[in-house]
Structures are given as C-alpha cells and as structure tokens.
Length: 509
Image (cartoon, rainbow, N blue to C red; front, side, top):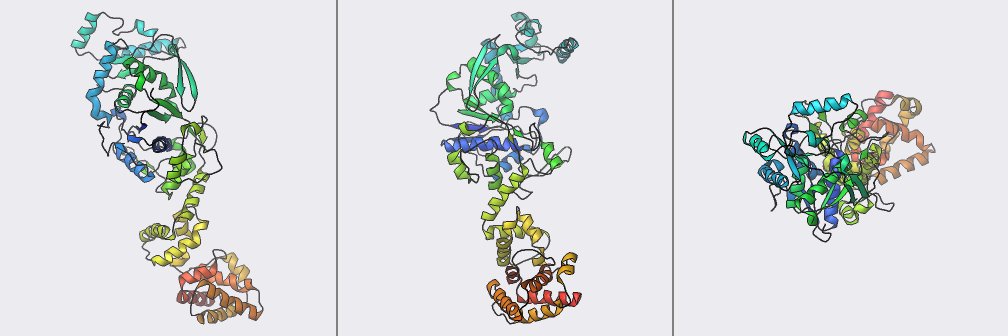
C-alpha cells in the first residue's frame, strides 16, 4: 500500500432503491475524509445486479447527495478521466480480468448447474451441515479444477453455462489491517470460493469493485461494517492481480442501530416508529409504497448532516454543532468508533432546532411563505420575518412556526373554554372597552410603545396586570398562552388588534 499518494475515495451505491441513512453516512464520511486530506470524492454506480435494479434510484441518489451538500468531484453526472462510472457501461472490461485470474490459476470455471448445487445443499442440510463451495468441496464438483483441458474446452466451445469462481487458498491465516478496527484475523478454510463472473456475462460486486477501485486509483475504501467479511477476498484479489503495491487502505464503519434495543436500523423501522430513514421522499415504482424523507419532513440539510456525522464519529470534545467546513477540518477516521451508533430521533429534532434558530429571519420567512402559498394564504414578507423571529425559539421545524402562527393570518373563530372560564369575568368587557381606547391613542404601534401605554393605564387604575392581559390575549389569539403579546399586536397592526378586541367584547359580553 502507498500511504503518501493522493487521497481518492468513492461512494459506490447500488441503484436498488432509496438511499438509506447508513448509505448517506457512508457518503458523508468519504466526503469528509477526502476534503480533510485535499483529495477527490467519486460517485460510482454499481449496477451489476440488474435483477434488483429500481428505475429512478440512480437519480434519487444523485439528488440526495446534492440536497445534503456533498459535492461530487468525479463520477456519474460529473464525468472524469477514469469513466465511465456506471459499472453496467464497463461490462466488457470485467471479463478480461476474470479470465486473467483463470490464466494465473487464481480462479476457475465452474459448470455446476443450479439443480446440482441445490442437490448438494439439500444433502448437506440432511446431515445438519451447511454446504460451502470451498477448497474442500470444489475437488468433487464440476469445474475446471476437476476436469482435463479437453473437457473444459469442449464445454466452453459449446457455450455451456458457467461462472468463474475465485480459488480461495487452503487454510491460510490472514492478518489484515482496518483503519478503524486495527488488526483483523481470518482463516481461508472458513471462506468459500465466491463467484466473480456470472453466467449472464456480468461481474459480481467482488470483481467489479476491485477492478474499478484499482483503475480509478482509489486510495481508501470507506464502507459499512457489513462488508468486513468480504475484506479477505478483496485483499486476496489484489494479491492475485499483483496489485498489492497500490491496494487501498480499508475502513469499515460501525452500524447505525435502532433507537431501542439492538439491531441495525432498517427502512421499516422509520415507518413503524414515525421518523424518516431516507434523506428524501421515495416512492417504490413497483409497489407504490411511499417512504417519507428528512427533506419533506422539514429538516434542514446542514442539521441532517451534522446529526449524521456524530453517529459513529466523536470529535474528542464536547462540541456538537459543526458546519460542513468545520466537519471537513476536524474529521479523521481514527476518531470513528468501532461500536454501533444508536439512532435517536429526538436528537435529530434537537439538531434541527439548533440550526433553525440560527437561520436568518429572511431565510425562514421564505420557507414559511412556501407553506402559506400551498394553503392559498398571501402575507406581507416583512411581517413573516417578524413572525419567524418571534416563534423560532419554540420551534423544531418551519412547519411548527406555520402551525403556531395561524392566528396571524386569521382572527380566532373561538376562544379557549378554560381560558374564558378562568379569565373572562363580569368586569372584563368594560376593561376591554377601556383598553380599546388606550390603544386607539397609540400613534406608533410598536411593541415598546403599546406595552408602555397599557402598563401606564393598568398602573393608574390600580388593577392587576393579569386582569387585563389574559383576556387581551384571548381576544388576539384565542388562547391563554403564547409569545409576548405586544410583539404579536405590532405585527397584526392597530386596525386588526382593535377589530379583534371589539369582536370578543361582542361575543362574550
């Protein structure tokens, strides 16, 4: 391995559906590692398994990365000197490498039919064993290791179906290095002879990703923990090709666990527990099943990314809020944990709240306006900015601001029963009528001015402030609690404030 070469990493998803939370984190950690080390971040689409291909999945992956702010330097949708970056477009390339391994004695033709393999599995199961096509069993199977050259040639000439399998070394101890996990030990006697090239003329993941990583000069392979069992095969493939000097370093990321209990977070968990596990909404083109996403649920992309970064990575300090440039500056694989990271949906909301309150009022007003337009509500932009400033500290999402700000767009049609019973007394209508007169005399209807006028009046009458403010609040928003009332009426304006006071007097007199 060459440790001083340029850092080049790749995110290589399969277009088999929506991009799961774990996949986005893999992309993020690759991106952060590349940026931290002044390297390149590649996007490669690994679509060798055509049976699982889902239309629209590739476009979804690209759009999700864009929404997350993870800019691709090279790859699908961008181009580059090592393309094409879809494996299906590199199909002719892989067979020559598979044949190269056969020629060197590191792989072999396997002519066993599906029926013959099933019979082997059934026979082993009957004895309470699991069938493995490995160094022991391959000596008794229908392959180029057990046949003479003439038999093999005859089968190939007759276009008989075959796969090409890797010839796993017999009983070899492998001590391999993982950046996150340190030394990991494997023995080849426990590994099977994986198929490298399928009967349909397509390579398997194992062959294609090794060939592509080599040709694309990938320096580090950063992927999920589920690929750790494949590490010995991949290292042995580099050795078989004679590419050991340019073999990338490997890092296997910890699992993202369910919020409760153990086990990997699955796409079903989100729908069951009421939170998204995909960055954006996705509809399965075959079943029509819809999966909601963080974007549509109102999460800000920088909050989503910040939350994901801390699922498995620890900066070594108490700091929790990081901009993307800060993450790029501080991220190292050495601070990625080995243990699985438990997903916390409440923490995700906390992150979004932190980012929402830091957004400018103008930015939030634009997002709030989008929700208003959907409901056919037109409202002054400057006033929307004031509403956002007033309500964002209490909100996790822009939708929360929208839901709690309804009294700005329309007067209350009813009043909270408990509030009326508690605060609307016999003398209240007369007090509210006097309040109307006080507010009518305020020329500059700003929050400080109206508050000062009302306080002077209440003090002069020597009555409790609550006797005025609680019914006043009922008149304006229909409820007995909420933000600072004088800030609210500044946004509503004098005319609307007085109209609402007159209305409650008429209804509850």
